[in-house]
Length: 616
Image (cartoon, rainbow, N blue to C red):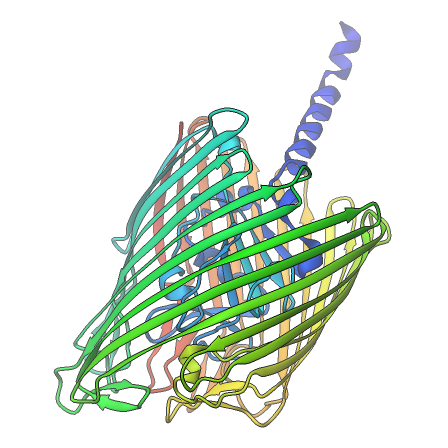
């Protein structure tokens, strides 16, 4: 008894350590992440829960090398550091293996920008251009949302929130494993988000967004069916009004998709994916004020208002085959995708238009990984794409080539480096303004080195990119063109994390970016963040400070941005918890200028939110 008493405490600590190690190793991200596809940032389920990350923008604002801002329509836009937040066509958002983006603008954020995260297990973010293995269209940033597996849930959830700006939300899901071969997961949620009131010249501006989201997953043996729908109703914020804001405006959008994934052969090394997307949106802006008008493009006109109805669809098939040997892995992929859009725009006092077009995309790729040891590898891949477009739009042939090396010399140091040659095709939004647009030609080199201690980690990520024929928007004509001057883009980031015991984790980041266009400032060139995670008894505390450096644009100065977020969670019991969260507590988050007038606004307003969650 004396021996048991003396060793009891150390035995208890040992069991706690073992359970913590088991929990970390069993995280789903350990199975889904692909180190070979870029420089990886992971938000685990535990991170998201402690952050009380309710919508995707709670995560996007933290990503290094990128700036989350809202454009004049109130849409979330992720811009490269130093650049202005216009339509970014190189961001890819996935729900599991399905990419969600529009056909015409080739961006997910007008509809999916405020997608809730209650149904998400973890998030993987891949940086470093042109990952080949995902078989996606050209991407500078890949965001993968992995849903909660029903086998791990085996129960239900109900969550709700109320915010100080009269926002609210309610979400629920239920997942269950029926037997060894069958499982399902169903999620549905609705939220309403309000921003503070701004004054621009004579006009009060306040944006309200309502979202309804649903997701269904069903698995039988090696066959997986998924359906998801995102429905959005919103004001258009500043809009395209010449002065102030439109007197009346509205946006409604919906995006539904289904996908069917099956695995074949004895080793399940052959994967087949079928998918179909259906997208509809309606945009309306009108001004009744004398001497004011709405600015529209293609062709550029100054009108009293307009109504735009856009219908898009996309369907296709993807096939993947994996050949594995003890020291080598060969991955092959094929893809066919047909996309189509139709636009019907009525302009009040202008030229109404009707346009439609389509494209066929054919892709084939091969990527090979040779392993010196289980964790050290050489990677080489090549991908060929062909876009066949209708009418006067030219067809595009594109080749992407990529090589890389990953070295884990010991448990203390690791290194990875990639070099890519790739292209960026003009999308429909761009080529309707200039049918002769050429594709961008890009080269990029990136490297990452990480030093690990028992409870600490320090890493450096950096790179250098060269872009020729850069596709740029002319702010006067609102038409796109190919820039003659070659863009040279440099970036570096420093990351440090430390675990102080089992209950405290601190993460620090600082990054810098620079271009050869030294006389032009359109966005922050430096930024960083500090994140603190702390647990004590039944309490979880998260505090995050996001910094973005200020800059000068046109005739005025944008001040440094400091976005402070704090979330405190109390676990009532094993199945219920209540949280209070504060966003932009200092009221000093980075502001965005419109470039039309002197109007500036924050992406995130100061607000307080109470959140309740019940697991059953």
